[in-house]
Image (cartoon, rainbow, N blue to C red; front, side):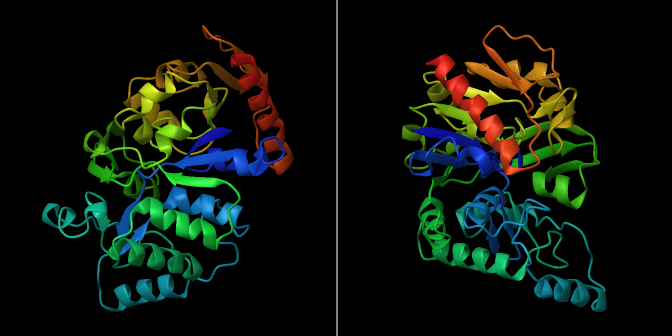
Length: 330
C-alpha cells in the first residue's frame, strides 16, 4: 500500500507513470482541498477534479486542468452577458457576511459567477453541478468524491483531505485574496506577504485519511505551501507523517519551481525558495528525491534522478526512484 499527497499539477504528472510501479488497487491519493471555491453557486474542487479527469482518461494534458476537447459555451455566454450589461469582470470575492452564510463548505471561498474568472468547460461544469447537488442533499465531500470517482471508473482510492472548509488565503500587497484569485485572476503577480489556511484548526482529516498515512507516503512535486500546506495544517496530519515513511519528490529543478508560484510562496513562509527549503517544509521526510543536477545536501538520504516529467515514461522513471526511496527508508 502507498499513499500520494497531491495538489496542483506536480503530483498528477508523477501519477501518470506511478501505475507501472505501484498497483492502482493498492494506491490511495489524498487531494488538497484548500484551493476549493464556490463560483456562481457551484462547488469547484480543482485538485480533486484533476485527479478525477486523469483517472478517467479525459484530462486535458495541455493545461493539466479541465476535460480534453471540452466546449466553453456557458463560460462564453457569461462573458458576453456581463459585457452587454456593463457588469464588472475579474474575480469578485463576495463580502464577509456572504462568506459565512448558507452551506458551510463554501465558507471563505465564495465568488460571484458574473463574468466567471475561471474558465469552466461545459462537461467540467456538469461535475460541479453534480458535486454541489450531492452536498446539498446532505452528502459529505468525501462521499461526493467517491461517487464521482466511481463515475469516472478510478482504479485508485481518492480521498479529499477533509470534509471541513479550509481556504488557502494569500495576503499580498494588494490585500487578502483566495489562492485562486491570486493565481488565476491575478496570474500570481501581487507580492505575497504571508499565507493563511483559514479554518484548518477547526477541521479534521476526512474518514480514511489518517489510516492511509500509516503506510509509506509520497509527497509528489507539488507546491509545498498551497498544495501540501493545507493538509499539514490539519490537526494530527503532520504528526501522522512523523510516524511513517515519507518520501518527498522535489518540486524544484535547481533554483526554479517545477510549476506554479512555489518560489514566491516559499519565501512568504520563511523557507528557502529552492530544493534546500524542503528540509524546512517537510521536516518529517525520510528520503528526498532531487534532480540529478542538484548539488543539495540534506541530513537524511537523498536519491538523484532526472525529475523532469514531460511524458508517462518520465513519470515512470521518477516513480521507480520513489520505490527505491521507500525501500531505502524501510
